[in-house]
Amino acid sequence: MQIDITQTDIDNGIPNDCEDCAIAKGLKRAFNLEDNVEVNVDDGHVTFNVNGVEIDEDMIKSETDLNEFIEDFDSCGLKETLNLAPFSFTINKNASGKVFQ
Image 1 (cartoon, helix red, strand yellow):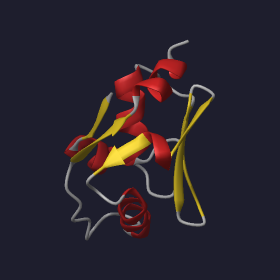
Image 2: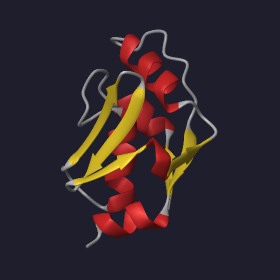
Image 3: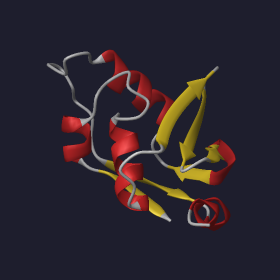
Image 4: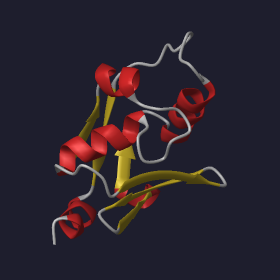
């Protein structure tokens, strides 16, 4: 399943908010959810919790370094100097299928 992080997600996402950051907004849109999405980084490892299903880095394929994107997004504060570009990543079918069960 492809997840698109759009410029709108970047512009409207809230830094340091695991439930409303740019990636969380893209995940909510892709899975048609209003909430129940968290994006977490623990010791440099990115995980998503989508509707109670944990999705770890082994289930995600991305050309963009997600950890670096999250660090850059969270460090921008009020986003005066935000210079992040939209991107996409994929979540393997097994993980995305569990979310819909």
